[in-house]
Amino acid sequence: MMASKKLQRGSLEGSLKRLEEIVDSLEEGKVSLDEAVQLYEEGILLSKDCAEKLKATELKIRKLAKSVGGDFEIAETDEE
Amino acid sequence: MASEEQTLTVTDITRQIKSSLEQRFTRVWVQGEISNFKRHTSGHLYFTLKDEGAQLSAAMWRSRAAGLLFQPADGMKVIARGGITVYPPRGSYQIDVDQLTPLGIGELQIAFERLKKKLAGEGLFDESRKRPLPKYPGVVGIITSETGAALQDVRTVLSRRFPGVELILLPVRVQGAGASDEIAQAIRDMNRYGKVDVMIVGRGGGSLEDLWAFNEEIVARAIFASEIPIVSAVGHEIDFTIADFVADLRAPTPSAAAEMVVPDRFEILEVIRNYEYTIRQAVTQRILAHRERVESLIGSYAFNRPKDMVREFVQKLDELQRSMATTVSHRMERRAQDVESLRKRLLGVSPQGVLKRGYAIVRKDGVPVTRSQQLARNDEASVEFQDGKVMTKVQ
Image 1: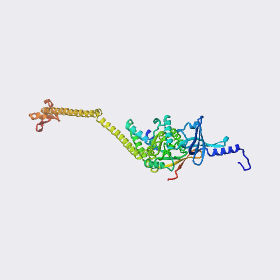
Image 2: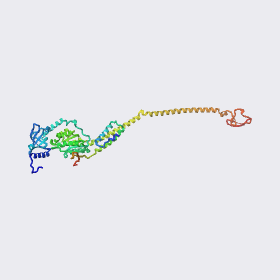
Image 3: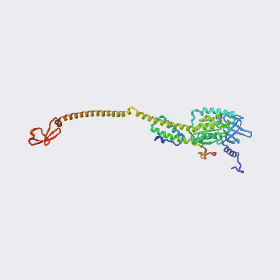
Image 4: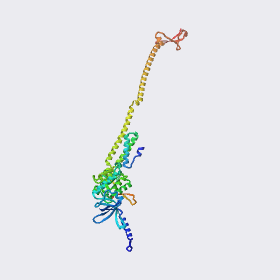
């Protein structure tokens, strides 16, 4: 169905955006009951997914350096 | 190349000196005091930079001098940026100045005000061009000193509020000669790298001179040209820099900048919890609404018509049955009466009744004899009375 295919496991922003869409369309109440139930299921999954993402505890820090060719290299920071 | 045996012409040695010096000192920052300041009618500036121990001739071409935001004068302390050039006809060298920054507070203030006015006039500070920051950045860039307090402050705040982000540091010097060039280049590099949602450019607080790099035009223009939204974070609260005016958002401190670029994850969790509640409610509402509709349909007059009709039919059927039963039993009773009266009448005309009245039935060979001729002498006949039969012989 249309709903579950859009489920993004990518960025938090994507997930939250989709979650907002679901909230909006459910609040608007224009979808059919079947769709509403599907949106609900997707929404619950997304909210769990988002909450999971927010549980990260370690801030990743990396350093951007220019390599010889002028491209960029990402290096871990020395201190940690 | 020059060996001891080789004799050089003045031109040759000068050419070698020139190439050697000019290659070695293509870009240097020299601090000193201005003396012998002269503005030529052509617009070029000529002066001497000096300190207690030495002096250096300096020239600034008209095109570059036109960008100066202060009025150089004898006795003024400055930092000159440029390359060393050798002028063979006179056998002299000088610094070809492309950037001149005053060091005195008064001059800095004037330069600051002039640049501010100029850039404001060009629209670099326009509110309309300020971009909103992404709500949930995945990658935050930071341009600051690798060893400064700003980086530590940003780290601390990000770790607390939103450790899920990635912080990408592009280390630069934030003060002293060349700092502004490094900062501007870093902003361009960060844009070229591209995989950054928002960036913080700044440093901890300091004196006006310390913060000066963030007041340079080159930094302002780099911020203006950035595709990535920039939060400026320079100094402590009261210090406003040119960078602050150009940036998409100005934070009073690096810590504050970190708070501005990422949301508090506990707030988001709260938002998510609200979303969850909302969609749960919405769906429950929908289901309840549907149930109510079904129930009201079930209770509706129209929906109940068939049932009513059936009930009416059943009632009618009952009535019909009842009236049928009544009719039938009436009829049966009447028939019973008929039968009774017929029976009585039948009884009246039965031989038994006649016998009771004193008649007798004569039978010959079991057949009733109704005429005398039917009997002859010596015929045997039976005579039946009401109480029994006797046999006789006709005489």
